[in-house]
Image 1 (cartoon, rainbow, N blue to C red):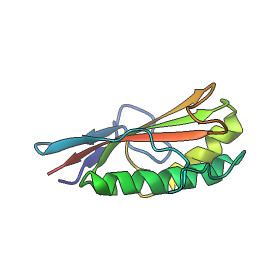
Image 2 (cartoon, rainbow, N blue to C red):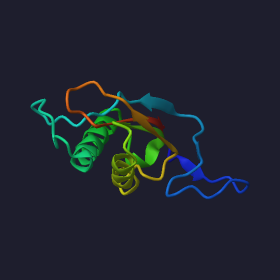
Image 3 (cartoon, one colour):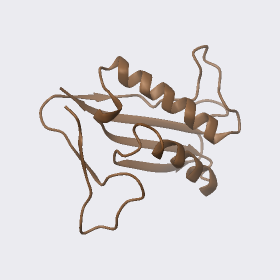
Image 4 (spheres, one colour):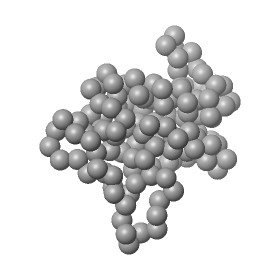
Length: 130
């Protein structure tokens, strides 16, 4: 089942994502937050939110595949950026928006810290599949 993405006419157009995702029937797949670690468990892109966001998206896509989901099945993402710098949040958001999951409804959150030393980015997803 592909997720149907819609915007709300009574709201301002969102910048690149959708207001609402609709899925009927099927199953829901939740991912843990994808983190910027490589296959060896090493942090990718120390002090570089863009490099970390790129690794996070790669890891999230792998998790979706393992769960039987495709990028088009994503119904909602939450994007966490440590340090709450507007520039870092904006840079990470551009990576997410430009990815295969970038049109799904999403929440961008600035947080003080994340789980790994040096981690700047984490993204989790909720998907709807047949």
